[in-house]
Length: 353
Image (tube, rainbow, N blue to C red; front, side, top):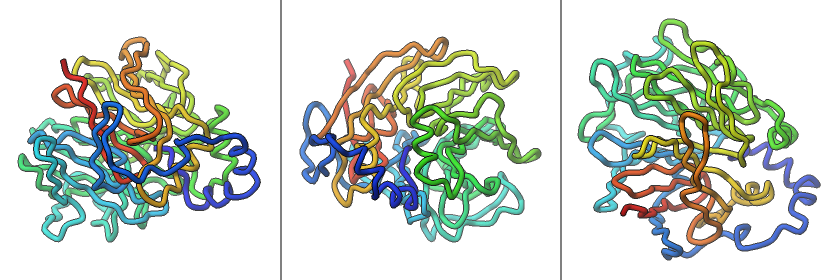
């Protein structure tokens, strides 16, 4: 998710933005205020920046409603595809706290601003949910998910000082990998450097016994989404310059593909990796980051990558109404559910036979 921190956004409000915006027009820079379906995309406009999605054990979809890199409040909700019902998940007073899985020194969060999420079935059969949290601290919050979607907070791990986290993927043994996209306090030039291919961050591997360690081969311009192979041998890392596949045993990059800035990943039903790609300009990205209401129309693609050589096939390409700026595509029963980092809506695209 390429949302810019409040400080960086303010820097862009001056001369840099004026140069970037010169000559850039079009509907994708105008907020989309209506909530009408169009171009094969159904929209549900009851959300707050539904940045990341994960499939719960009961077939409902967990939605991470992003607040902001500055820790603005957000929450988790449970979305029922069949009925379109929404159920609050966290923060909720009914959620129990039974720490067991995280760092013993990491306390229950006093505030909550979710970003990337992931769910996995642990070796002991329990369902674990990991959530990147920006409120008050940079941390990964760990929850147990019951069969009906109810949550129990099981612990957390506070990130090493100085970085902004983005996305997370869980291991079956309870550890996780998480991306650090850039340093806290970074100015606008750090964001521009990522656009031009300069490294701004990396990924961490975390375990309860060893804590955080930097992942070899992960230095990259704005590391964003992260996913794992089913055997947990390879990491798939999304950056502002494309996708890479890292052998975790050696730290070697064994496949790489140059693409437009990539956001989150999710495995498709046919075994390919679905990635959301932001195909617009930096000006459009900045405009999306400050949409006051409605949604942005920034162009995007949903691309299926072969997990072997990262060869690609575009599955969805769109710009403008009814939504843009997609950050994630979750495929369930042949239907694609699209989240976004800026806006009030979830997109639904039915590509089933």
